[in-house]
Each structure stands twice: as structure tokens, then as C-alpha cells.
Length: 565
Ligand SMILES: Nc1ncnc2c1ncn2[C@@H]1O[C@H](COP(=O)(O)OP(=O)(O)O)[C@@H](O)[C@H]1O
Ligand SMILES: N[C@@H](CC(=O)OP(=O)(O)O)C(=O)O
Image (cartoon, rainbow, N blue to C red; front, side):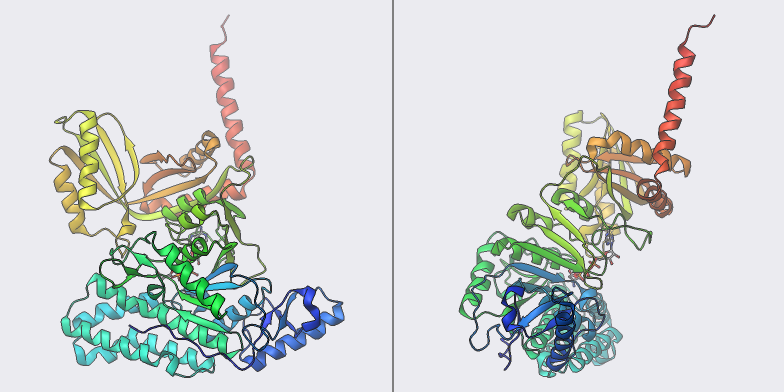
């Protein structure tokens, strides 16, 4: 595997400086343009143009001050690394986007960021598809795999458009092609090889970006997470970060920064298995977890995750486009939201932030002026009813009814022991004395779908002690909010669902007290989300309608109890 590239220092060094040091002003960089500076010269021009405007406006404009300082001659870098800025695949999908992101990073004069990057655009998916095709296509046809060519073209084009040398990624592309040929030769793609394969996405994006920062005069250093102490379990495809990671990562990043300050550009999503020593991945969307792990390791002030939406939204905008930004969330709410399927955050990513009590800010790299979502330990909940509605589709449910071979206590214990033995997590649970309904977590499997064989095994085992009904194509609708007001939330939700003619098949409230889950049929789920969103976030009158209806019911009830003459 390739080792870290230590980028050579560029001849001229720019660093954002606080407005107080305006004597050193070099210029301003602006937010909000879709295309950023194309070169060091381009950057200076943007900077100079904005400086003039700022001077005309009497200062305090919309930009940032720059000075030729970072790591350069006469450099003074007393400050410690202060924030993590993680940019997802959507934020770094092209050369233009990388320029934009560079401008963004540099537009925060007071920050000393650690940058975490995902693979460019859809590279991870393309690598997975290329790997699968390689298994069956034969070595001589590897070079024809469409996805491999798309990956190669995208990265070469990006390097060229950014004015970098092809050598930045040349070895990586070579190695990747060799790997695909190896897979074709072996005719198999193990989980371990698959992790190694997808790691090329992050390894290339970070090399390109660090080289670009150096080119525009901002000293940067690329790091592969698996080389700097990201130690994980050996669960390829979904590895857990181990405690040893924190001191190791802190020592390496902090040590390098003290010795020779340069913006660290770290691969998201990747780690190193503690037993195997092989490259592991942290589950899809795992770069968020990389970012929060670094934040905790270094005790940073803030963790920023930059996406292509204005923060965490009231529902998935792909399901219902009128979703609104949620300005504040607690770590608990964000965890439930992610766990129950909101793609915007990795389910495990809040844990390090919560443990280190470091605020997480979700921002839009396409719209940096939008305030985004701030996630903290606590927030004012008095006025909060519902925060967000999350949908998890294609869920499998099991209704398990005891054959009474075991007492109630033994029955529940046995059922969960079967899940544990087969390594299957459950999402929602509802129990009665002799029956239990569970929904199974599809996300532990890479493809986010349970494999039929696994399901057959579970059913076979459970049938030894119970009658089992397998219900597929179900959906979990999770209502994340203030469960202190659960009666109000459920009343309103059931009112909406009844009006829509939807029958709720199971309901479950988590112990975390921020989530209530309703299970409905998959085919009805999207319409439910739309109706619920309109009721909770758009239609002020619905509550009044519910209250009026209830009032009428009470009046009828009361009057029916009045003594008749
Ligand atoms: N509740 C939600 N709030 C915001 N985005 C959501 C939500 N649910 C789903 N999404 C989707 O998540 C996407 C952002 O997550 P992701 O693709 O992982 O971003 P990135 O690749 O930039 O890290 C958005 O483009 C949006 O389509
Ligand atoms: N590239 C990986 C890791 C990741 O976090 O990506 P993103 O930040 O684009 O969701 C994936 O696609 O899963």
C-alpha cells in the first residue's frame, strides 16, 4: 500500500490571519462562488479584488484576511490545531469542487484545521462495482471495466484541471489496476480485499487535495489513517475504532504539527485491523467517524462535517423536498437519527464527540453561509416537539410467538441468544408475555440488505421454540423529538396516519427517550413521511384540528354521562 506523501513546501505561503493583524493584509477570499481559485495566481487575484472592495467598504466585508505566513519564511504558528473539517464525497467530486473547498478552508482565518476527506463523488460505489465485475471478467478484460475507466478518468482529469503532476496519483492508479487484475485472477473478492480496494478512493482524493493546497501556497501534509494510528477491529466492511486510536493519532498529528506545521489532510473511512494489520473500513459514510475520532483525540474545539445539504434536515430531502434545516440537535438525537437511517451522519460518529464533549457542526459546502446544524450535549428542549422524521426502508420484521416450551423469561433470553449467535442486530422490539416482534437491522450488511440465507438461518433456529412469521418489505418511520411530549406526538401522528388510511403494524419507544418508531408497509412509507412532515413542520392548524376533535369527543362523552330527565 502506498505510504503518506510528504508534500514539498511551496515557495510562497499564504495563511489566513485575524483582522486585528491587518497590517499584514494580503487580501480577501470570498464565500459563495461555485468555482474557487484555479491557481495560486488565481487565488491572489480573487484576494486582491476582494481587498479593494473591502477597503472601499471600510473593512468588515464578507471575506477573510490573508498573509504569507503558514510554514513560510518567518512563519509564526503559535496556535494549535483547532477544528476538524470533514468534506464528504459530494463536496470533493471534481477539480472545481476541490478548489471551492480549498477556498472554504482558507476562509476561516482563525482556524488551524485538520482536514478529513472522503473519496471523490461516487468513487466508493464505483470501486465496489469494479471489484465485483473483476471477479467474473477475466484478467485480460479488466482494463475494459467501465467503472474502473470512470474512476481513472475522473482522477486524471481532476489532477490535470488542478494543474498538478500526474505523479500525484500515478502509483495509486497502477496499484489499483494490479489489484483488479489480482481479483480477476483469483476469481474472488473477500471482505478483506474489498476494504483494501475501496481504500484507494480516500487515498487518492487526499493526495490530490494536499498537493493542490501545497500548489496554491498553503502547506499541507497527506496522511493515510491506517498509517497514523487508526486501530480497529478486524470486522472488514464495518470495523469499530479501538481506544488505542486516540493517543496514537494525537501523538502523530500533534507531534508533526509542532515539528513542522502543515495542514493535515487525512483519509476518512479507513483504519488498520489490530490483528490482521490489514486496511479496514468503518462502514459506509465512515469518514464522519474519522472526523469525530480525530476531534476527540486532539481535544479540538469543534468538528465540522461539510455536506451537500444545509445541515441535518427535518426529513430526507430525496423523499420529500420541503425538508427544513434543524438548527440544533443533541448528540442523542443525532445518534438516533443516524442509527434509524438518516444517511446524513454515520451512526457511530456521535460517540467520540459526545465522549469528548466536542460540538459537531453540519454545514453545506455548496452554501457555506447557511448556519447549518449544531450538535451538542444539551439543548433547550422546552419548545421542542418533533425534530426530524427518519425512514428506514426494506426492513424485515419477525413476529415470534412462543410455543410455551419455555417460561417468559427463558423465552426472551433464548430469542436474543439466537440473534447474538447469528450476529444479527435488531432495531425495534415490542413484547407481550408470549410473543415478541422485532425488526432486523439491515445496515450491518455492506449492501444494507439482509442476505436471504442469514434470514433462513434465523427463522430455522427460532422455529425450535416458537411460531415465526417473517414479514418483509416493511419500513420503520422514526419520530425523533421530545419524548416528554410523546402523547402529543403520537396523537398527532396517529391522527395523520388514520386520515391517510395507514395501519401501523408495530410501535416501539427506545429507552433513549428521543425516538418513537412506527412500522408500516414499505409501499405506504413515503406517503406517510410526506403527510407527517406537512402536519408537524408545515401545517400549524393540524394540532388545532386534533385538539378540536378531541374536545368534541370529550364533550360527547361528557354529555352522554349527563343524567337524562
Ligand atoms: N435528515 C436528513 N438530513 C439531511 N440529509 C439527509 C437526511 N436524510 C438523508 N439525507 C441525505 O444525506 C445526504 C448527505 O449525506 P452524505 O451523502 O453521506 O454526504 P457526504 O457524502 O457529503 O458526507 C444528503 O445529500 C441527503 O440526500
Ligand atoms: N467514501 C466512503 C466513506 C464516506 O464517508 O463517504 P461520504 O462522506 O461521501 O458519505 C463511502 O462512500 O461510504
